[in-house]
Length: 135
Length: 180
Image (spheres, rainbow over the protein chains, first blue to last red):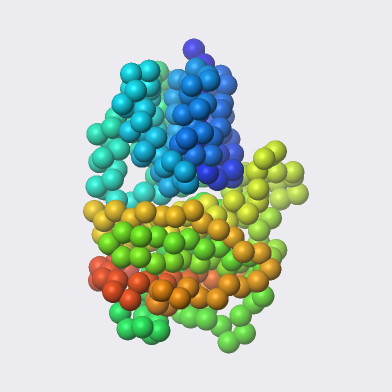
């Protein structure tokens, strides 16, 4: 089953890097949606069926942590698989994200790490088409 | 921290964190580390200056200045496309510089404040064609100059006057260990 994915990051380059990386993971991809902040991300979720969301933390308007809290408080999205992709270095905040049932990937990241994290979330096994490229 | 007095440890720390981030994120390698100890006598003409402010246990600002010819290869390398290939629709090259400073700053802060400290990093901005004056409310802490295969970059750090960072010598060791 292919995954419909939402990528939320205020940087157009980072969104492009994440999408390119996703295409290298071997994960079957359906529709890929993009949003530049948490608020836009919620609007996408209201309009489309999404199986997995990848969020940045530091964004204007609504940051990734606020978006994640909103998701977890809404029955429609409470169990949506979420991966936070960020430069965050605070173990305190990373633990807080884990408590909100999100996986965490530190930037820069590799297709292997992204693939492994999606596998952990979905319980499926995918064959990565990548080398050791880092993004 | 003494105001307006560069600390050698900050320079070293900035060099190691920047060298690692430029290499890992943008595949840009430092050609020589001879220049990293401070500002050159005749600095290059900067094409773009990115700035990002952060707050938390202490505040500050990081700046990365790059020469004009660096922006295109920076964006291409980060996107994994050929240098002369058209960037994907909707992608702005200046966002590559914003992402570079975002990741560099994100890698530096746990070293400065410890891995339990929570910092908030504001949205970076980019100024093209001119060099903005130093921030008024922060004190210059250190800088490093990177001679890369695609141009020259300078990374500067400004901190609030009351900033209490973890021991930078120890932090230096941590940064080096993480690189190994």
